Image (cartoon, rainbow, N blue to C red; front, side, top):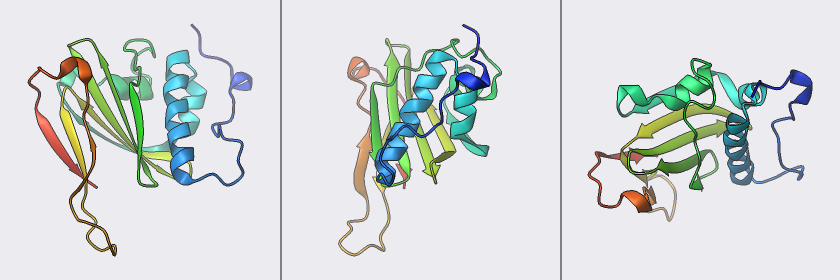
Length: 166
């Protein structure tokens, strides 16, 4: 499938509300990114990402699938990212989890600011736990579990684990 021409690309904001909550808008933006990647809509993907996107990867070197897709180094259909869950964390982060059989388990952590994706962390074949470590908020318990890997197909598989502090 050839990428659409720029006249066919829809604007990146997919919500009709004039003043949506940031977490709702962020989830919609990240969902739109995966949809655009699946359809090969390169222009839409580019509009959703900051030009100075910060990227971090943990996993086997041959598994840099998302970064290769985002930079155009590979065809958008080299690896299909099919999100199994999309979870909002706070008002600026979204966690996306997916797996393709027993060999490919991935977690993506996206950070957004003003409707634009500014940071991307990719974890491939790694169990992930996200904890909130903000001690300065009144009534906030430091170290609260925010999100944890839930790959139902891979529960017996041994994978390295990481804890992400937010």
